[in-house]
Image (cartoon, rainbow, N blue to C red):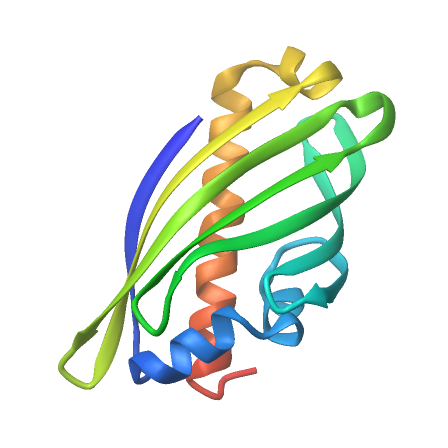
Length: 148
C-alpha cells in the first residue's frame, strides 16, 4: 500500500517538529495506541490495537526515526507483529514546510501487511489505512491547536 498527502497544521514548524518527536503526543494521536515509549532518541516501542474488517489485533513493534533533518524532515519506519493476525511493516517520509502562520506536513507512506490480515483484501486494508491516517492527522492538528 502506498499513500501520500498533505495536512495543514495551524502551528509553527518548530512546534509541529517537537510534537512529531514527542511520544506522549504521538501516543494520544495514533488510533488504538496503547503504549509508546522511547528506547533512545531515535527508537520507540509501541503497542497498537487495530480492527480491520472482522479482524481485531494487537500489534507489538518497534519504531525507528532516521534521516533526521530538524525541523524539516525525517523518515519514520516500523514493524509490528500481531500474533495469528499477521504482521505490518512500513515507513513514511515526513516533510514540514512553513506556510504563512502554519505548517504544511507532507507525507509519503509505504506499508505492507502479511498473514491473516493480508487475506482481507487490499481495498479493505487501504480504506482502513486511510481512515486511520485521517484520524491521526485530525487528532494531531487538534492537539497542536489546543482543542484536546
